[in-house]
Amino acid sequence: MFKKIEVKKYVKQYFPSFVVNFLQKSKKKYWAELSHNDLDKLAYIYSCDKWGTHYYTPHYQKHFQQFKNEKVNLLEIGVGGYNDPSLGGASLKMWKQYFKKGKIYGLDIFDKSGIEEKRIKTFKASQTDLNLLNIFTKLKNGGIY
Ligand SMILES: C[S@@+](CC[C@H](N)C(=O)[O-])C[C@H]1O[C@@H](n2cnc3c(N)ncnc32)[C@H](O)[C@@H]1O
Image (cartoon, rainbow, N blue to C red; front, side, top):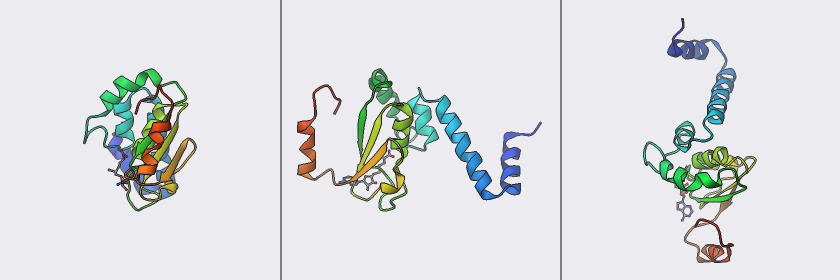
């Protein structure tokens, strides 16, 4: 029997990098699909610091699981990856996988358009902008802010 580590080494050694990338992405997708009820695992899969560095996900899960199957609109302030438009968004991907019907928004002082995908949209703005913060006064009741 091959050990897992040997298979990985073999694939990396003998297959072109686009095949290795495809296999890695497929594995991640499959694993994320299986773990869609578990925010701790999703945070780990997407390398998000909400589990491991910080331990926020059990608390999020406790409060958010009642909305899991709803068409939530979720805004995360601070996308990650700083001034690289295609870096960051680990948490946004985690939320997208958790809230299967949700729309996920990210706000950052840097352009983050490179990480956008279906159901993930980003805005460039600062959380210290008072005009922006005013939107919270206009939101409907019933949300969690
Ligand atoms: C630690 S990262 C966020 C990681 C992300 N929440 C995650 O879990 O994947 C911090 C991000 O906040 C952004 N940021 C810093 N100051 C900000 C501000 N005033 N308004 C909006 N975003 C800001 C930075 O550009 C950076 O991308």
